[in-house]
Image 1 (cartoon, rainbow, N blue to C red):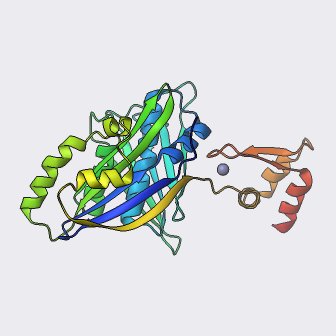
Image 2: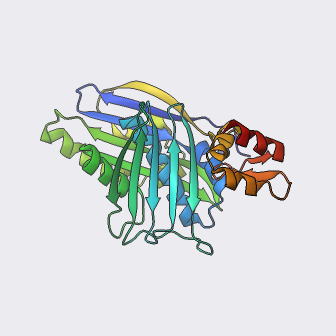
Image 3: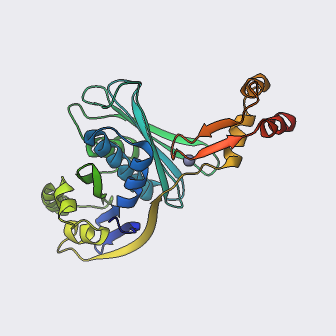
Length: 288
Ligand SMILES: [Zn+2]
């Protein structure tokens, strides 16, 4: 009964130049990533969904032309999840937990790292501590925007689950533009208290990007200045996998062909299956 659903990011600026709002619907993107990664519990699903949505918002705000990865590390440094979102809107995710671990608490020692790949290939990175005692991802994204990007930003991301199915996922970000006076800031801060948790809005089917803009900017004239699509999508391909195999030392490639059987590889992000015959592997060595 899941309809074909297109995810969207909308951005608007208030006509007085005080606020910028970015709102997104990530329902289909989150469904795709969850189907590939199969988080074991609703709590893990929510955290993963929120990380994906937060990454989409931060990329749209800070770096729409660049790839952005948001990496969340739990209290256990061996547990982490990654959201990876690209300028064409394709977004994927990865959950890495130690064996037999199905939750990723981040109450005391969680970290959120944001990495952007700039056009010259260099990385721009920032890391913040997940605010202590926080069970949600939004405060960590706000703290990142404040510490690393020096912008006052309010972010709310959420995911509405029913019986382990994603019914809706999305979020918004309100940014205070630099020339802002105290008055409107207080009005906005007061107003957003009603929307700090957007899951109730998602549950009522009232959290489309257009509705989120209308709710957060109620009574303030604004203009929608941009719209982009987002979707679940992986960048893997036989060529990319061959490239990374080719970068292995020759002896490693040789040991992969020892048994004469084709090498089977599954993409960690989307679970797509790839096969390399011994002949393929030979030609990788020859090309080296
Ligand atoms: Zn893939």
